Amino acid sequence: MDQRTEKMGPSTLAIHGGRPLTEGAHALSMPLYLTSSFVFQSAQEGAELFAHEKEGFIYTRMGNPTVEATASKIAALEGAEEALLTGSGMAAISTTLCALLQPGQQLIAGRVLYGSTLTLLKRMERRCGMNIRYVDVTNLDEVRDALHLSTQVVYIETPDNPLLGVADIAGIAALAKKVGALLIVDNTFATPFNQRPLALGADLVIHSATKYLSGHGDLIAGAVVGSRPLVSAVREELKEKGAICGPFTAWLLQRGLKTFALRMERHNANGLAVARFLEQHPRVERVHYPGLPSSPHHALARQQMKGFGGVLSFEVSGGLEAGMRLVNAVTLCTRAVSLGDAETLIEHPASMTHATVPPEQRRAAGITDGLVRLAVGLEDPEDIIADLDRALAACC
Ligand code: LCS
Image (cartoon, rainbow, N blue to C red; front, top):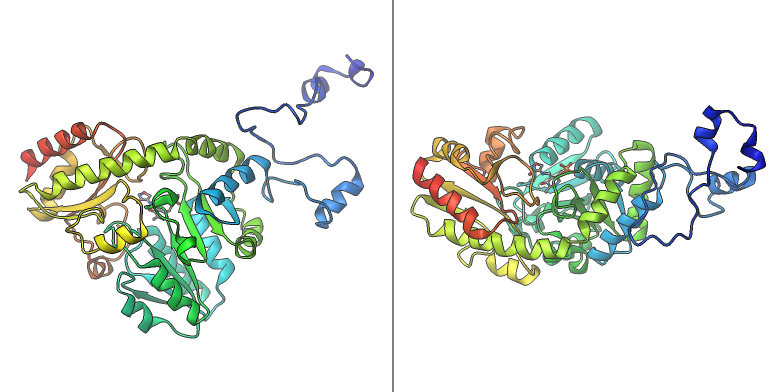
């Protein structure tokens, strides 16, 4: 026991006793900095850190080593200068749009987007005076016609949720650049394993890291990825909005990332195998999957993607009722929303992920009431196919 602690009581010792965990231990696995604050060596150092005269950590809402190291892995995967993590994919989207858009400026958004993103846009339009125009971003002419000198941001998902439509990233980026607008791509479905939007001309990439990046269905997180000035602008907004990713979540995310490429190879292979099976099934009317040569998006997808991911959607004969019966009839596929997990997940967009989108907006986007979405997991593909085969025979 050293002199400082010799005379201390048990309450103080429980808090201040022992050796602090020092730097330089060279742990192989990423250290988890589960702390809200960082200690200043002197009053002067604290003042310098707050004045940005010195690099370092102050308070986890403003920055944390585990969170930043994990973010830098995602930046590396996307081939970007910088990335930041947020508390969810929705936090990444809302913080980014608040940081980059002023009232009255125009946002062009894809007509098909994740349901909560569409609901967020509607709220921002009402509350923040944003001017939003929805277009079919899989049609370059529609994007060209909608772009305007007051367009500040073009926001797309490709492939989109839940119809797997594919937008021409390089084409849209070139058009946006002409009017000085930024292109933001939600790359959650493709992931940087299959597609790198920044290399195709996009300005920012958004992720729900809840999905393939973490891969185990045990956390909620988001990411914003791009050039240093743009990510810094979002970071400034995030500091006060406070929608950060905590260090433990970031630690789980970096652990999931170690197997990211292996998992994506399997998701791609399983997704394609299941899409091929469904396409030839007599009770399936239509399959949406850009990896199928019959898809209207296949040629473009082959150009800008390396693989096509594990998410697909399909319509069964018998419409809504048959679709609901199918979701109930599976025994291996799991009834749950989300995607990118080890388990194959099945859901019904009209009543689940896109239930907050008004029915007429859903129909205009092509999301029918009978559409079923499958996020193909990492199981043996024959077992997933056998489950679907049995369920289709029983219910349609
Ligand atoms: N972007 C896309 C393309 C998404 O699919 C989701 C969530 C988000 C953003 C939001 O991310 P979060 O805040 O949930 O991390 N998509 C979901 C889905 O299709 N089922 O459950 C969540």
